[in-house]
Image (cartoon, rainbow over all chains, first blue to last red; front, side):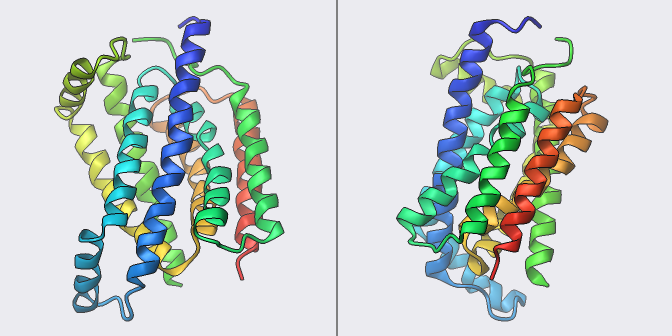
Length: 138
Length: 124
């Protein structure tokens, strides 16, 4: 398939949705799970009340909603772009999730973690300079 | 120890699920019509592909494993560490989807893995 400007534009728009909705979803899930707490012994009897709390948590459902929006954008972009392009390109969401966790959850993010996330973004940049599709259209 | 178990499940089931979903989406074909009604029809068409359901099953396992991880560790650690799936994803795309992965992509994936290692080392 030709690498037209239109193909690149719609790829970048959907990747923007991917890198925004996925981190927001994960941060909301984290907020919900921190409120619910971890299971103590991880036995079925211990896990059931935790499962009930998960399924009745508004924050968890809001997070699931964000992840569903991410999933739809992800599915759409995968219909024309390579998986091995989309998956690394969506890694910008790792930087976004750290920023959101710092501001919304007040998590302490050590310098080494920021450095690691920056290295991940460099890897994303390297991958992002390859064509979206390397296989022929069926 | 349980952190490693859940991380293993997130990576394995998550990557396997994404590969299955990708295979299903490639079978359906590229989206050209972005109107809501057309997108709904597209989703229903996707739901008739077997690979989609296998993928959704594996991603469900990955999702609950992620919830378990998030109840133990901070999200700023958990989410970047799950990027280990990049290595699994690249190998899976090569073997399962027959994508041609250029040396530049491999280098990018390798750099991402170095970043993930640094993030994991920041764990207290």
